[in-house]
Length: 584
Image (cartoon, rainbow, N blue to C red):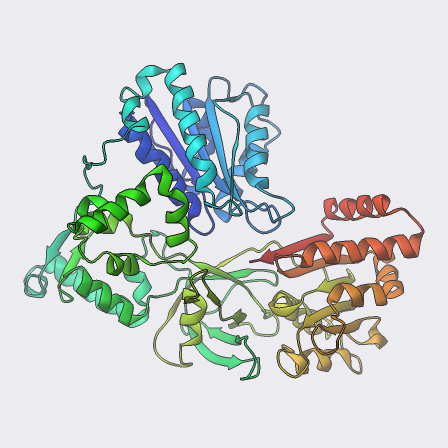
């Protein structure tokens, strides 16, 4: 971790992103500052900046996204932990001017929580806000950019008033000349296959590329200098849902062919996928590249007048909403945009600069290292959806994983990281709620406790699972029933229980929250014995509905008010015994 040397007249832009949107927004901040003539602009990921160097900065813009139930991105956690140090005084950041732009979704209860908390903490440490925190909202008709545009204009105008020398070409930000193109930030050098054979350094590069291709094409494009923690091999790819259902959920088993694995229940596995070979071939053909050469590493380029006009409209404030509908809502790839505008002949340097790198995708681990010491199991829903223009889109990572054949030589680049569901002690009773693929971490919890029970006393588990139909998407049915019979960790004989809600098997829909209320006395009994609550699954209404059902149980069994029940759960959360992990 490092920080660039402080420079007078420098604007530092720091971002924390989970899916890549905050990266795009931060780079846009940097590009506009450069257009305004800022003497020095640095755009850095938050986990590459040393927070102890923050007091030496003059102007800092933070761009942070919020994940799950108000959680910060993984790249922000270390930085945030440092800022919470009690030894930092209220004057630690005196002299630092800052601005925070958050990216979130107002459909979530803890909307833009990470950005709001960061703004408050910087203020507590003595930093002075340049402007109020900006709150980008995915629910806006233009997405987060609907807020980012006016927020940026306010930022530049305020900065120009504070320090005019920071943006000597302020007018170029407000009224940009789209006919002038800056220099590309990357240099692309092409080497033919013959050159690669003759030049030792290129020959080594060629061997490295060929080796990477044999493992995972994604690695050719991945720029993280840390590299994968593990290269895992898929040994099982089973479909958990019936063929006639509209959902495809897979059970995947991965092994490390070279050594062991280190992880714990509650962890997540990040996977870097690859593009499909056909998409890569189409991209090479569209960009007129030599597929055998090696590389060491928008309206301005259109020649057809009607395409130029359309792209210029998209780049204008008036076309912002239409651009959002065309691009983000439809999930268009770079290749698809180039195919829609065939007259665009963009220099490859600019294409490399504008094409986002592939993003890692995190999945909850559904196995226990005690039960499967050299394997990691995943429960993966194969993502597909219809766009507003009725185009079928497929999730890159889940579709790629679904298409892999077990025991083939291709290896999968993976990283283990701690999830938000901390592993419980064997003596703590558990109330687990995981409908759909939310059951994944709890399959690991149950397997872990079953393994622990062979050598030590363990506390009981109540598990509430939900799906649409008993015959179509009852994930891991045999596993749950095996552990709920006889002396299993989910059995009533052990003080536990397994309860499942089939939402579509009867006229009246039944969800996990209804099952929780039905088992009110058992839930309350376990809570009174010190149980921890874990909730995982869809980030729509489920967490709020389940929390409301728990409040009903507390009210009914204790006689307290609904408000007191809510306070009771918040206290449980502060004790580290109420956990929620969700995904969209």
